Length: 298
Image (spheres, rainbow, N blue to C red):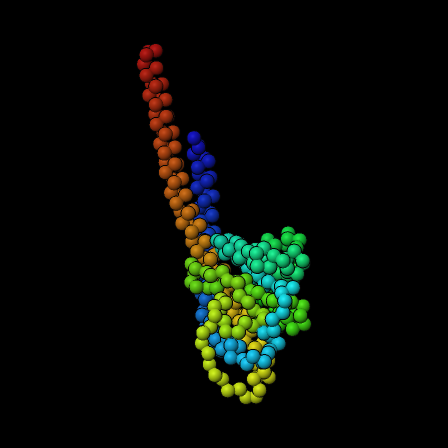
């Protein structure tokens, strides 16, 4: 049976942990509010741009072609894995890593075996997990992107992705990220970034909507200017989605940890009171026994 000192030490330890998790929950809630506002303001604009792009691409004539929608044999594949820099956010990072691992081991298993699979990791957690993989190449220049997340820094990455695709350094670029639904819910997605797929909306669903646009100047010339701007916006939206998802997951995880600490403290208090009562009862019995022995001897 645990003695009273051990129980008191455990109670103090759990109480300290609860204070930490409660503070982390409040910090995460504050960051979530800002991140949620950013993604909710960005999403309608981004989705409309994506819809326009999908409609235009699905209405291109058979002979029309853009630099960004040219399909090539997928010899070299780049996977952009967007995780967090820190832990303590429940299953957020593990679900993203699981999604990326499935993509690498199933969809692009052949490219991985031939050394044609590269991971660009944004956030430390993804790289920390996959760096042991000898068959995967890594780009580590943008791990700290979330330390100063803004459109200019995001655009620098997305423009490099487009540049590498146009230079045929990579034939396919995939995004693995978490779409923010609400504080308790995230969707873990694999989204094709390049080549631009005709007639698709977010998440890879086929678009059945078609629109007839009048182009001025020529369609191809206009699209060569328009598509990079849309892709920059889409990439920034994915970063904002993941950022909000991370803070939501951390807030929920810390709330759960705080509640668990409260329940553990309740159980420890019951144990402490039981042990204290047992100790008092034992002392009383010893006193009574001692008194009875004295009477007998007297």
